[in-house]
Length: 456
Image: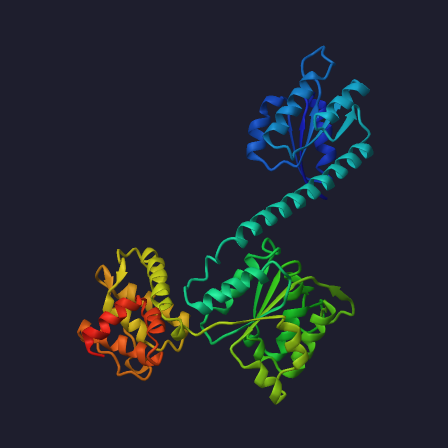
């Protein structure tokens, strides 16, 4: 069965019947109609690949002018339609004229089934080829546009985040293997997906595999697939994750959790760019872009002999290190507002802002769970809030997780809270006013005014 939808237009019922009976054996869908005046409706309601168009519709006419008119009309709707003209009156000059106007072939009636099938099969291949070219053009155009914009799902003004964004703009269009390092909850999966979304593989599959959740027994069958009968429950052939991601991107999360024997098996696949299903002897070629991530210190693990150095070399052509949330300064409140807008919409709340005391508390909190924890805190606060802004009481932050500072009290006056935050920022940056001001989201002049105000 050829993957193509055919539309046959002819005023002869016998022609339509014979075409439908023959062609439906070989093509996905065959539609027929008696009048070309139905073309607009049919093309708007159906995905048509090839149009088989008669040249004459009025009795007694044989000059083909109607066919040429409707040919031009079809191509004015979409120049990529594949149109094949047919007529009972052979005319070389007319055929040449039709080809010049955009038809790809010309068939005489009555046709031979073998010739008709061969013509339509060639047309179907041309249609698929044109679709691929058009797709590649769109990808190229989108990629050029994306190269000029920031990564929309990566939010932050922190200098480390800005550096990561600039690096990703350079790396995303390539097929370079990328290793993403960072604590749990820092957004490693978000960065991996952004790399895929801005790559030449963006229209293909993004396969996320959590290696930390795979047992030793499941590793090979899940990643490389298996054949029927390979083990007790293998009742049918099943491709692995690498095969399913062929042409796209595979993201191997928590790669630091792999044992040495599993690391060796993964390395073999990456080196050979082939996978062999369990129970099979045939190696299958794969074409995937590899992105990996972990919160574990791989270089230290290499030194201890718990992670293969050759595997590390293979996976980290480019290395991205994501900063923990506690080191991202006012990005904390930027992200908090981002989540606030999302969850206020989700839960149909009218909350518009986070009050200053709560904002300062967010900055002082140590965020051991990073962005994921912040997301959960804001979601809970939106659910619990009864007002138009998020307050300290809504946040329900643990007093034990405010770093080395005195735990913040929910009833602390705003001036005391502000004094504490200013003092904390100055101490953290060892008196560097520019850095302290940047973390607090203030200008240097504004910070100096607060230092004078609080006698610091």
